[in-house]
Image 1 (cartoon, rainbow, N blue to C red):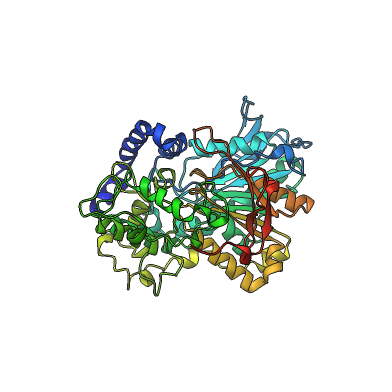
Image 2: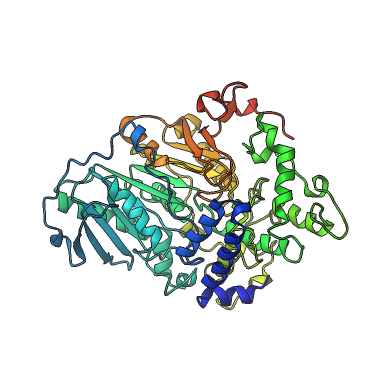
Length: 550
């Protein structure tokens, strides 16, 4: 598993050079793989992968503002106080072509969590807080942080963010977690303290409390949103939680397993392309439409040992027994038992280059992100022993031993208080997500339903699954998703999000999609006629109307 090398690369700061090589490799392949894969790589590098490589925000937020029922971009409110009265870290920032004039306050809370709050001089009366990625610790002026800040300000929101109590530049990956206070800050405390402080700052500055507070995040940012709904139900009126990390330990087990399964198998990044073609040949039409998407990969009975051409020595279009077995292990996931739930698998459809990288495989064979993250997790959170060698991990006995921090990191399905106070939450997940298995989201949602009841859950919590979409965004499916406009309309105008619009413009030479997906457990079913890129050609159907499993 190259665990020693991985640890040396990531914890000494050498990892970014590895990812620059990967970006160069993908740049050379960009005509074949598509610009979205290259774009993801460059964005990841800009964020100093792997220190914060799990995506934090939803990059298409507010993109449907023009058609929203609520005009949340109207800004009738003005400051009632001077910016410098907001504290020692306050300064007035002049307007730019990207963002309006605003009062920026940087500081550190008593818990040790760093924060930044931005209060526009023309305000819409709402607070927008955006989440972190991976192990967090992002610099407030990092590219992604700036992009999220500008996005909120440009649409009239006061904005807030936190570093969750540490800086990745000083404490990379999970190294901060040996400090219990920082562990708790990262788990949930920093977000709660920051939004509480942000509301107080906004109230003092405008002379009026924010009418609504919204959370927007994906991956770790998604987890933070769900955790807020569960632990601090009064913090946010509406939450968008894309692909939330609802069970950190299980995902880290998956990362270790994938690396072990693929190591020495002979499989390479390039050789996965014919695997993807074989998966699509078997399962693309399961949903009644040959469109390059598998609407529910759980129903795809793809077996690499049966469905891939075999040969003894391997070739461009055939696979050895070792390669097929490695793939089988990845699909099946680690042995199930105490500490490893049944959903820790990999559904078919992940084999496309735009979804393989960077969480499962890399073009050069260097450690993927899940391996890097899992290595750090076992050392600093799971076993709390920096000298631990992940190559020694026993998949039958160790999963139950690394869950000491679960109560701090993982939200429970008790959302009764959030529902009672009128909160609304939307979760969306890409079926081709190779970082965080959508089965984790299905399991959590079903647990909420078991507590609240089906119709009662749908009253405040909607869950959408989007085929062909990678982690938070990207992939080969319709990844342009603005769930924030939907949650605002739901909170403020009572417009229930029955379907979630999702598009892909195909500007990179790939396919174009214009779809709208039904909330789980309903399925999105093509009517049999009409333009397949007109959402009106589809209807929401009961799960038992799905085509027979193949």
